[in-house]
Amino acid sequence: MSARPLITTDCHLAPPPRLADELPERFRSQVTHLERRNDGTYLVRPDMMPEAMREIMEEHMGGDAVSAALAQGVKVDPDDDAMLARVIAADCCAQANPGFSAQSYVDELRRDGVVGAVLIGAAAFGSHADTEVDVAWTRLVNDWTADTFKDHLDQFAPGINLPLGDIQASVTELERAAALGLRPALLPDVVPSLPYTDPAWEPLWEAAESLGVPLATHVGTPRAMYPWSAKTAYSPGQGATTAFVLVSLGMAETVAWFACSGILERHPKLKVVMTECSAGWLGWLINFLDHHYFGRFGNEFLTDQGFQPMKATEAPPSFYIKRQISCTFMDDPIAIRNRDFTGLDCLMWGNDYPHQEGVFPDSQQWVEKQFAGVPESEIMHIVHDNAARVFGLAV
Image 1 (cartoon, rainbow, N blue to C red):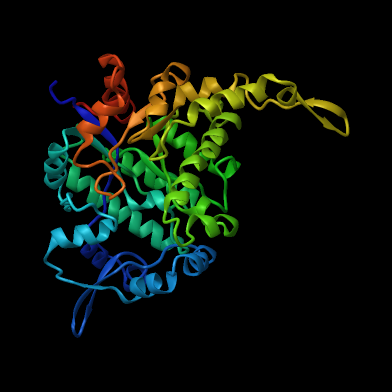
Image 2 (image 1 turned 90 degrees about the vertical axis):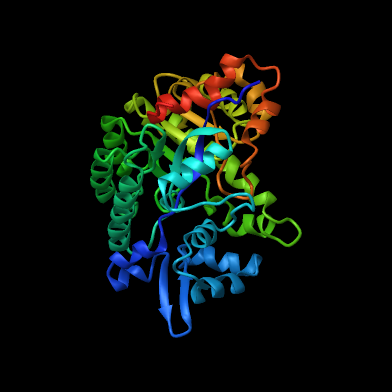
């Protein structure tokens, strides 16, 4: 069978470290940058984790060495973009050759049988403590991204980095970057200090809906970094397996926030994509949420004034999930098996390029294997059509 035109909804992008040279010195030291020293040039990747998370990393992952390496930097050839791109990708698989140009992504994805991609930038994983840094850095990165991919916006959906420490500044940057053709708006799966159900986020949801810009949340470390989780997620002998489970299943909470709190009801045209979290759990979640919505527990709760209605939405959670939420996966035959329950629109595919845990450069084979026996029209709906529709791709 001929190769299918796959669209990956999970393709990672990082700007060249020399871009930081355009920032003031006090900002530059807080982002990935090149540092010129007497014995050569070093790539420095400051630790952007909150202090509590960094302490947990040090306790349970031997993080003293990790933190020291980040602080000291890695000696590099500043003119070797291929090497710099691999180092910045961190867990880059041996077969990948990432770069900093649009053509490098065109060439790499062609090797994988992929025709289009949603590009996930670093802001999907958190923000700096200094909001001024975030405002300046996200604007600079978004400008670089727009300039780099301006001739390929039919094939790529380059994500919008946002200064999430300031929601109004995020709205301003969303409006500016969307006008450059960038989409989606990138979010971490959770902001521990401000859950997405907080009314403070409303201006961002309103702006994204009015602009027709989808949201793309991406799994990160916060849910696996709490002390009671880190002891199992990162303990010796377990590797990252437990952590992967925790961050993937943690997206169920994010889905519930959007579907059950009224966010999606208030913003019926807002699309939200949960990235790299798999989707085998989605059918169970839909059933669980609807069970409680229609059951006695979901109907009312006891207050000083007696039993009061508990529902926050007019329709059950399944309605909003199926209408507005999608989950992406690389290899998830359970999600495929449950597609008659979740519907096809909730499912998207991604290869997680260029990471070690991804499926590059064998995406075609992975898709063929896990979709065996599925009607071709349904396969295309999941591995191509949904992404093309939601992210505005024409490939």
